[in-house]
Image 1: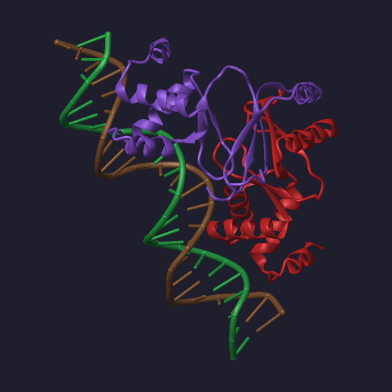
Image 2: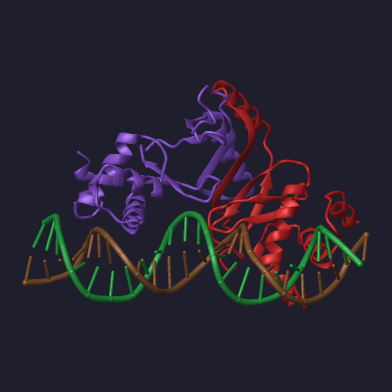
Length: 138
Length: 138
DNA sequence: TTGATTGCAAAGAATTTGCACTGGG
DNA sequence: CCCAGTGCAAATTCTTTGCAATCAA
């Protein structure tokens, strides 16, 4: 299970780390450090917010999770599935959808080449409203 | 000149506001609030950092400037030219290039439509290295 | 055992806000 | 003259860090 991922990252298998990684996998979505902290507290776990931040940062360095800086101040994290994708974020209810568009990816490479940039990373976020029932109730 | 833009925004034409808007137009680039503050201080102006933040936020609301949240914590501002564009950011020297790609724009609309999202805004930032002489010396 | 890890509280960085003073119209 | 605007310092928000106690290997 995920314990091996933690070990492979050169980190000791501790309760907080297992709890956080499990939560991210179970939840699947995009959670802020604060989200993770609150959920774990609600589940009755003993954990410190600083630990959550530290562990998430370690996981990010280890390539276990990816950090996104959407608008709104807080960073959000998700399990690194290994497959790159971009995001649609609903500005009303916070819903996040993922997508991957080959055409866009290729165009980005062409643009970087044109400007003489070697791409290290890129972030495409479309902000809008999902206009779905239940939206805005979050 | 730009004084009319300030007035049109329903704001009084004050020294700090004129100075900030002029600086952004003159500089052309992407400046953080701190940048604006420091440059004005160097130019001998008397201004408070809080005022810079307040004015930039007002200008943003008025549509005079656009705020970007590149990675690195600080927001950067640029004059709103009226024409949307995306950015290439050099992670070594901080250089910022602008581009607009019709193909990408169209694909984004198609994707939003597919997910039932009405687009409010979007941000595409390509992070890389410009690999140019002078890079990394900034 | 022993160095890695944690929790807490304090420190930081970026930005916002309260308030008395100032200045533009 | 009078309220919008300003500067300063204090407050907020998100995140990081120092340190003593604790825990995994």
